[in-house]
Image (cartoon, rainbow, N blue to C red; front, top):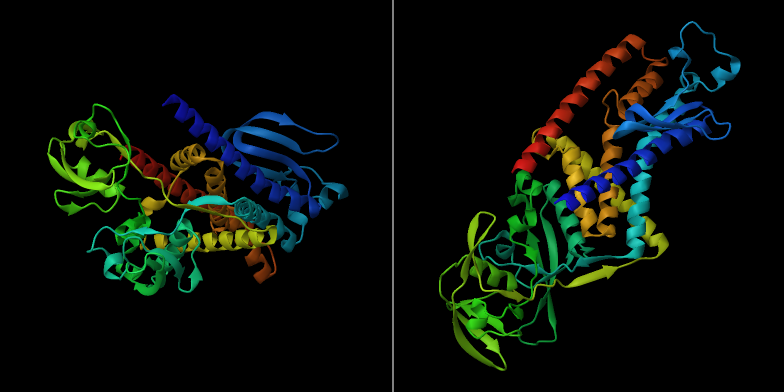
Length: 457
């Protein structure tokens, strides 16, 4: 428990540090290109804990107490009381730069977040990431997937004519279509039962419009009746002295039926056994070249406050995996497309939250983000880098929202300045800043509330 907590916190702080540094580097770099004096570059907000200047630079590089943000402070003559700036000062004054330069400096922070996501996605595409193949488990004949024509063991090949390369790719394409309230055309490869070495290629219409927005906030594939394809219920390990061993089962045996009902796969075997504590089960078994029946009574054990059945076996459960890697140009192209698609989906989700189509419960705060950071770090560095890329996109999109205090609010002021030909009066900017701060605090309270509810549920 303690080790997991420490790893979660370290993973969260590292990810947040990378995102903040990259964001603020965007402001810093473009400001320097535009001739603006940069007085401070801070990772974190609040009281400075460490300050360092390098060489003849006037920029203070700072680590501050609260690691939930950062800032770059520019020279601004409006903040200096009872002093007349020199010509050199005015040359580096942020407020004296043209409106287009100010727009470039402010926009550079979010843009650098998108650049970071492109770099990470491109690196992942070039390296190659293991992912389950898009082969589906369809267990229920009452599910949406089954009624649409999909069957257990089908491999999804295309969605609306676009090639599907893995499970994540399939999930992503279906999620995009579902958020747009579109049904999709799905082509599958299905093993031909008459000729064991051949496949049929079939096309079906998958009615995503039968799902509501709440379904897409959860596991919408499971709602449709589609899960990872699991191998047959072949026993990989049988614990000596357990109920299965006492009944005569051995490693390599395949459970074909239980109480005269076919066992679809290893997951179905687990489900039946877990639901049958102290209940005798008649199992039809294929093993050693013959079929035979055994009577097994799962022992009752307590797990997470529930009583379930166990027969002390480990059935095969490995997923069929694929790993695709691409050339540098192709990886860069795919990184750009994935970043764009994710940004668009994020904007759509925000819009649906604002108009009430998606629940405010989807707004997450630092507690949930930290939890995901820890989970992805434990899953491996490839998953962790993908998590950082996704959070970087979210940070970029959020900062572009036209909320005063955020970068998007400043871009709104400068856009109005372009339209009316003069800066917005300071009194109106101050009023907007106070309003924006109120909105931001309310969003933070909602996010913290949702985080706490998630942790308690």
